[in-house]
Length: 366
Ligand code: NDP
Image (tube, rainbow, N blue to C red; front, side, top):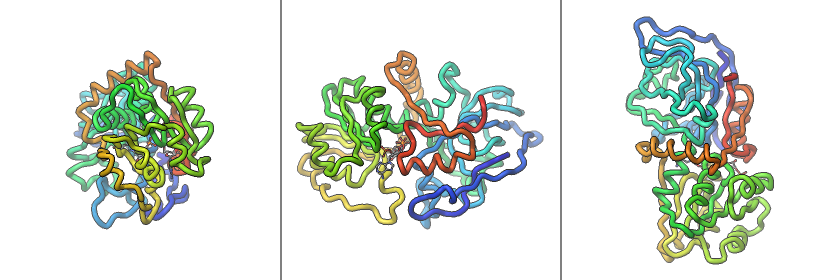
């Protein structure tokens, strides 16, 4: 059972060497008398929030820290290969919280989900169709010790589609004709936000870190305009070029200098959906924002949100998104690393911008 473990706690920028792929024995049997399953993992998701869990927090964080020596965990898509559970049979395709490993024994199947739309690419359940779930109690015996002891919660944190959907519609509250700006726009969340904004009749501009990504935004994700922020000397000037009348909605994925430049370009009563601040995740001390007072003078509502607040909307979201994908009203781009050996590099790549689209790892053939 090859698996990816955390070698040591991380400070600053993470490296591949902070993780290790190790071999171990797979437990391909369920405990006697249990209602459990063993799954073969097909895809596991790479998400920026995993970096947070690689640091040791003195105060409890919003999600438990990973533990050195233990397997990394995240959302994945799997096939049931052993089952003593009446609701799951061998061969079922499922998705849920699993290990970055070949096989995982799950003894608490309460939050293991069957794939609702097997006609869609399976990997989409790590991304555009991924759901958030709050676990009341996690008792998966192969979960690392820190999770076994957590009785209050654990989470599936892989839901870029629902994040985009709830952050855009519920937090940013768009209107037809709004001027919308999205950062990290070609990524898992950003590509969906931009396309939802277009479907709502907004004018949409995205920023990304390479010319290839900028082309993708315009050619595949139907953004009206896009720019490579790494080539801009002056982000304020770049935004003025694309938004001479200002920005109504900023979907914030990166923070730092981009947020500062956005603030002075916001329109009156603008809304900022603060989804993530990836430019700050590897810094010991966060960068200063100089233009924060613009929130006051322009009566801008900048609202943070966690996708966990919206999981009740999942079924509605899923049906709507499957409809968009089937009708090709929304395109979805994935970046699939082949094999667990490539998983550490894939995760690190989120912080250098190496990924083009939603990053995931193919663990085994479907
Ligand atoms: P992406 O697929 O967008 O991958 C991360 C991208 O961020 C990289 O490809 C890179 O793109 C960009 N990036 C990395 N470092 C920097 C930097 N220093 N400055 C600017 N851009 C950078 O990831 P996701 O779509 O999964 O996540 C996007 C954001 O959404 C993250 O901040 C994440 O934490 C947040 N998030 C929040 C959730 C919530 O509940 N609030 C839930 C899920 C995600 P580029 O080449 O364009 O620089």
